[in-house]
Length: 137
Figure 1: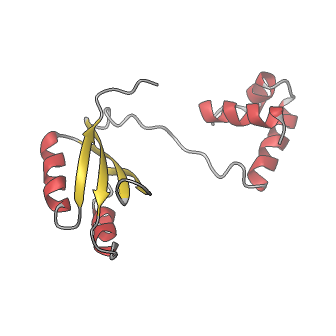
Figure 2 (figure 1 turned 135 degrees about the vertical axis):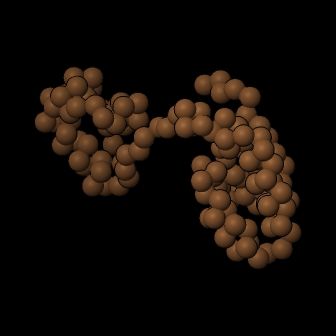
């Protein structure tokens, strides 16, 4: 992978719907050459897929929270089943080392729905809650 491939990845990270012609122009290649490079990056597994960025606030999810999850037992399946049932609120679930067992990234339409989630969560794990005030980057 060379600098051109890195620039292609950077451009696709900003806008994965860019045309190959436009991508090629931005990285100083023809559209066909850019398409061939993208295909190679996909075939080698460097590019695993494409996704969209969703504005959660416009979908009605105004409360953004991170939860450090602490499970005292070694049996985590009840907790994992619970969060699978509540996946409409969970953006990401990370198994972590250090402080806690999991880190949940969540969105809720209201503080009331967050509160109900936390009450239900108490049946499976302890937690520390952090509410996002603003995104700076």
